[in-house]
Image (cartoon, rainbow, N blue to C red; front, top):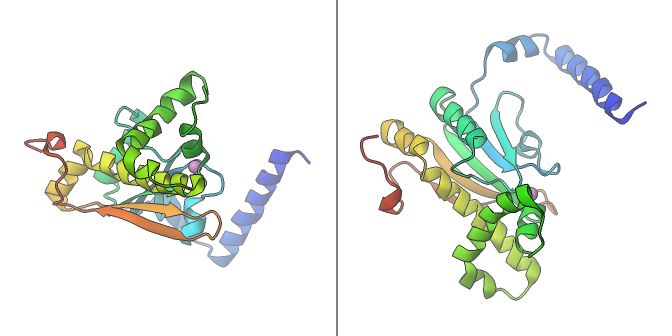
Length: 211
Ligand code: CO
């Protein structure tokens, strides 16, 4: 059997199992999507949003990219955010990074990963520069990278708060609640590191009039 054929076979078994346990399962999901959460996570195959939070299909709207970045020129991320906030009306947006993130580690080196990856990882290098004093004071390389993972999540939550999409929803509907979490590959535990709520102020240069 080819590697990919196993996936299709497992899919059939999974669908049969679901239908057996609840004959209306797919009918119900096909007609309704009302997730309360938007998840912005790392593409890393070891951090599957549903599995680590014990949630089912239909409960979390998911966007993943390398190192869970919120980049203000990323049309893909912004389209997901706009749809989740303004149409699905999610109550929570979670940015979830993870300790041992390859993208974060790569950004701490001076390696030339060539055009596209360099462009992407540059966003993390900017986080390093913003927090250089705190990071340089940490002796152990592992601990320094762990802290960078946490600081990166904080900055990405902050990047969400800079968008007019979030500011407008905060002003008009007092939602969504923003969360920054870090998942531990070694123990499977999620460590909440930051949160932001409607009414919180950020540097006024980012705050829009007349939302
Ligand atoms: Co990662």
